[in-house]
Image (cartoon, rainbow, N blue to C red; front, side, top):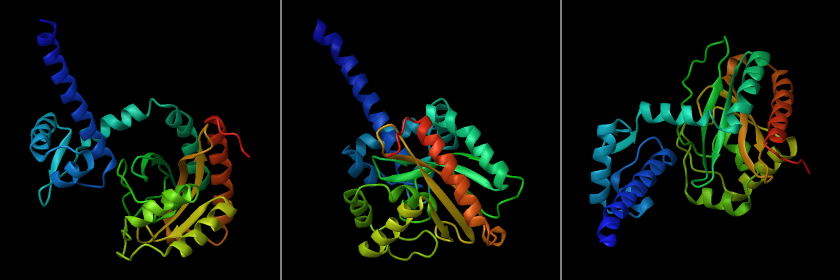
Length: 263
């Protein structure tokens, strides 16, 4: 009798576990994903994924994308953002983002490392009075290889992780060029570590300047970065030093609040 009662409970737990794994796969994937890619990532048969996806589509958590692919819905992103705002890093970071945006009059963002997929996403931003001529996509996984926001975390990962990322061959989102050679990338990351921040022009978004300083957690590992984005015509000759000083100072403050012990 007990085993008969346990069977439905175990089946329900199995469905919940698979659904959570599927939602996690969407959250950590790129802009869209196919059933074949989900099957390889999660180790679930396509028939099972079809059934789960139909339920998630009905619930409004995912939506269909072109070429028989799927992506997270606006509602999924909204719920994720609301939940993330309750976590410590966002509570600590929000006033810092607003302060940096106010002092620079440019848009300041918080980028979060996704350690399972070795990618990153923007999870919060403070806008400035000055408009951006391009869109900054929030809550979307991005490569660490391109742009200051990715390089600002990549520079502090261990060599094995950097090698894994390079092996994925993630091309430039702007012009499709191949990833840099390992030696060239290693030299660039060493330079970023030496100065304490990353800066790029037009690598992640055409016509944009990006700057990012790392944020470390209690285990002395990079967990996020504090970022600025602005159009290249607004970036003056004295701005790099001024912006870099503010970013690194405020990122160090966030790191201390996260329990990081310098040195």
